[in-house]
Length: 95
Image (cartoon, rainbow, N blue to C red):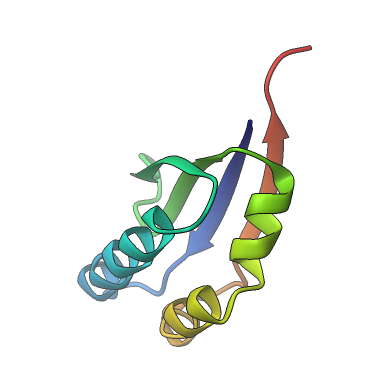
């Protein structure tokens, strides 16, 4: 199992728009093979920084979802409200 941490910096004033897009992306991710769980968080000191944590069965499952046309289509809606490209970090569990 892996955890994927996605960091997004949204433009000021775009929180509601982002939240609507993020909900659609998470709904789509739930259908991806290997999906276990997902969580959406926002920064305490900077509420325009958002984090998505996704647990997937394997790195291969994540790569398949990352490169899928379904994800590209949904995430493309976000690009206009991001001030930086999204940052994706893959994390493993244990030592």
